[in-house]
Image (tube, rainbow, N blue to C red; front, side, top):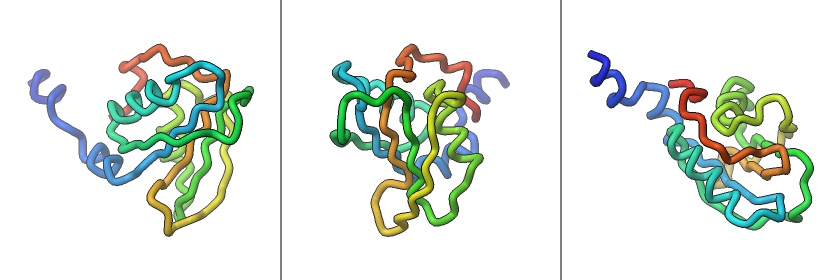
Length: 120
């Protein structure tokens, strides 16, 4: 039973796959966006990467581009990356875009992966 539970996606994961998170690296550390995108993929989200406006962000910023503006979904994304308490959240609905969220990584992002922190 434990093996079946561990290898079966939750219904929540199917919903997450439909959400695209655009990841941008706002730090001088190369490849942080790739690590964050991998963590989001592991958590069940689709992701893509694009350049940030600058590489000196002190704190990460999650921009909610959805029409629904779901605070719970934003918190799940931030928790998957371990930046719940430090990241800023900005509401900027753009329902026509490909991405549902844009994440600009800051110095507060720690790429150490903790799968036990993910919620299913």
